[in-house]
Length: 137
Length: 137
DNA sequence: TCTTGACTTGGACACAGTCCATCGTAGGAT
DNA sequence: ATCCTACGATGGACTGTGTCCAAGTCAAGA
Ligand SMILES: [Mn+2]
Ligand SMILES: [Mn+2]
Ligand SMILES: [Zn+2]
Ligand SMILES: [Zn+2]
Image (cartoon, rainbow over all chains, first blue to last red; front, top):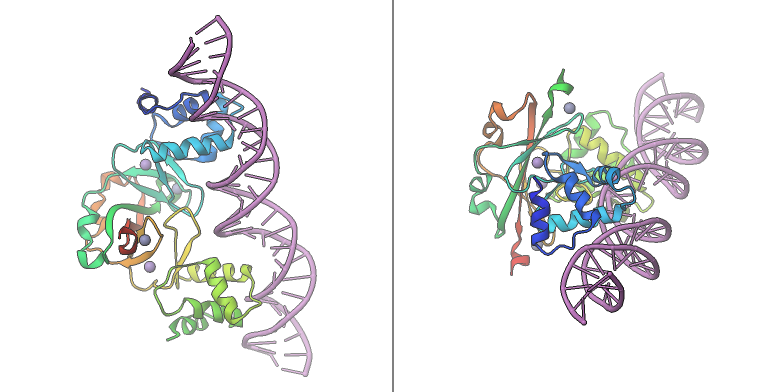
């Protein structure tokens, strides 16, 4: 499983117990945890890990492109380990649940040159909003 | 000019000097100001206006659909008076400048039923990112 | 003009995130 | 196996953004 740890080691990371547990928390499932949720889970395995270290580690992993920072609302950012498979997000407007979705179509080709105002456009995100099955029941 | 004030009056708003200046700051240009920027401009006309009132008024206008709340980064939300003409945003990753853009295509029709997971999808936002002419020079 | 409930105010509070001085340790050097 | 040291961890102070509240003010209908 832990491709993530392998890649980090390969990038010359000093492998500390803190970085290991943060990577383990994120690796695997396609979850979208806040920094404090990551901290809580990491502290389950390594009680003395600090909030600052979790923030530092998440920031480094984002810079390396190993995880993605997602801010769907004005609340806490969420960290997404599914960085190697392009996808968009579907958010429940009631409970905040997030699902990965894979729309067809290419928003970049839907933005004519006349609508780019001289920008060098390099990325896009699409956020879909609606009610999840539980909340619409 | 002040369609906004007219509509608010029509909705039964008690018209206070505070609400008037907030509406005046937002009305007109297609700007994307933060709450504190709105407060600063409002205070130019009405020095004793409080931050709380600006936040209250913006929140009410959002609830009425007269303005739109935009959070493109993890920073302060921006308030967009261009609520009556659907559009998306193009954000400079370097300086944060925001431009209104009008992509062709319909992201909703690009999301197959199989990718909706039982959600009732009602809205979407597309955020384009890149370097503005100034920052790419 | 009077009355009243809607609105405003300033300050305390909460949450998310950053910064920094100091301490600890991973991992290369010997 | 031990030493060294630069990189990383720590916790607490600090900042930015936004919310809440009790008390005071005022818009507008009677
Ligand atoms: Mn995701
Ligand atoms: Mn806009
Ligand atoms: Zn829900
Ligand atoms: Zn720029």
